[in-house]
View 1: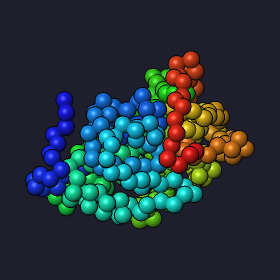
View 2: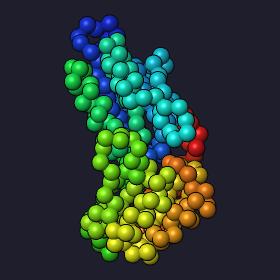
View 3: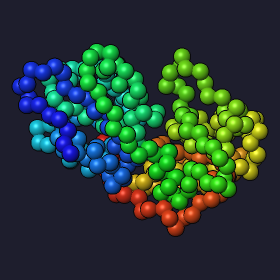
View 4: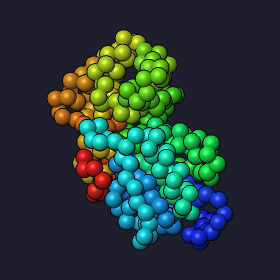
Length: 269
């Protein structure tokens, strides 16, 4: 199957923007459709958590734009990215907006899709493998397990993204979810752990931090919740990291974790 394309001079309205999930870092986890779109696109807008091996898939002459965000580095504001996608759709036919993980899971893909649709620009989402599942898997940790409970919650720990959004009710999550997969939680880890303990989780609840999941340099910290923040700080864990809390951590099977991939990123870790 190939994606419908038009010649560059076709006067048939705006091009199509594909919001494509690049996966968690290991290029082997890219979906077949994402691979095909990268080989056909004539414009690429990509993030900082996209391995350079994927950038090599695009055709010669493809117009490339880096709009990555990473704590401690210059970031392109979201309105500027939205405007760029609109502008590219006016003069290109197949635009890939390549995002780490999955576009619709803490990737602001929903915002971009709504913005493009509101301006009459064709847009499609191409799901990707999310780090919240893949990083634990590469460490041998299942995010669900019959011995670990019947529910799991994916939640962002980075509450500074939008001051207008209500804060996460960590105490409520402590009472309502058997397992937590926390994205962007390292910076606020101490407060998160304190709130979970205040919400009723036991001090010895199994917990983990996985840094650079699925790629070379992957690190794993296994701990109990009460000691997690201190141990992560003492061992120098840094972003990007996934934090897991719950009995599923105790179900780890180390032997099943794949070898992390050797990759380069636009902004080195």
